[in-house]
Image 1 (cartoon, rainbow, N blue to C red):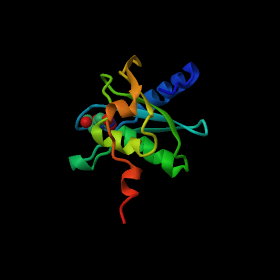
Image 2: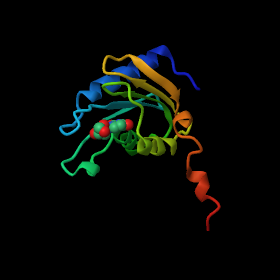
Image 3: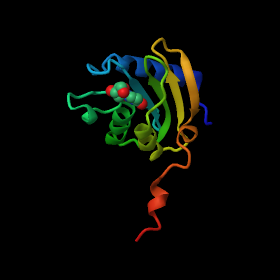
Image 4: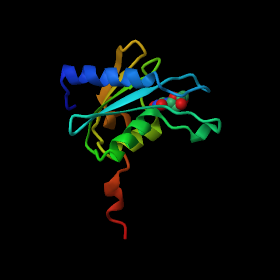
Length: 138
Ligand code: THU
C-alpha cells in the first residue's frame, strides 16, 4: 500500500476529527468524519448528513469525495475516516471511492483518534466494478 508521511497522516486525522464534529446525525447518533488527501496536497473533508427520510442521507466518505471532485480534484491519495468505533466505509462508499482510486489507502480511526484499521480499498472491495467494465460496451 502506498504510504503517506506521518505528518500527512496526522493532518488527515485532524481534518477528519474536526469535520466529525459537524456531523448531522440526529437519527443514528453515529457521527462520522472523512478527510481525503488529494493529489495537489489539499484535503477535502465531509461528514455524514442524515435526513428524516432515512435513505436520503449521505455518508461522510461520499460527502468528502463529492467535495473533492467539485473542487476539481480527482486524484485521491489517502482517506482518513473517524467513527465512534473505528468502523470501515460502507459498501456504497467503497464503490464510490474506488472509481477514483481502487487502491486508496484507508485509515479508520475511532473517536479517540486511535487507528483501528489501515488497509487498501481493494482489500475492502474485491474485484470491484470500475470504469473499464463499461469500455467494451457499444
Ligand atoms: N455512515 C458513514 O457516514 N459512513 C460509513 O461508511 C458508514 C455509515 C453514516 C451513515 C449514517 O448517517 C450513520 O453513519 C449510521 O449508519
